Length: 140
Image 1 (cartoon, rainbow, N blue to C red):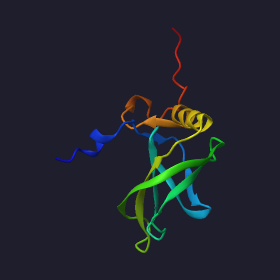
Image 2 (cartoon, rainbow, N blue to C red; image 1 turned 180 degrees about the horizontal axis):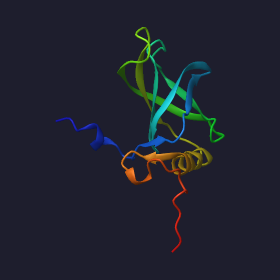
Image 3 (cartoon, rainbow, N blue to C red; image 1 turned 135 degrees about the vertical axis):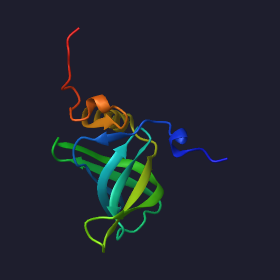
Image 4 (cartoon, rainbow, N blue to C red; image 1 turned 180 degrees about the vertical axis):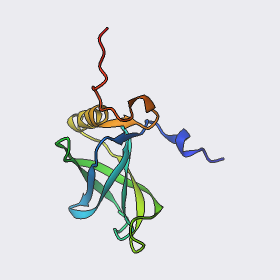
């Protein structure tokens, strides 16, 4: 019997506060998309259907220009692809790609953890929707 996708997850997914652009590459740039969610285990991106499906090990570059945050050379493996329906254009439907993080350096793992704490909100943390991390500090 197959488990539900949520039951297989080891890490809780978080959504970025701002638009984060993700590039994946294997030597030369292979594709780009918008970060949909991220966890300690991996991430998913939205991209146009015209981007070729990734194959093999890759490195990810992530840019959050609003926050001035950049993560680079994160090792990942492509794990899934699914359709997201039509975007603004009938010609270019969107696809959702999932990437799993491979073995990272301690510095890379620290940067992922920092990104999760400072630049995202958990999908189930409705209390924090509309507030940035650290903006709801109280004393005591």
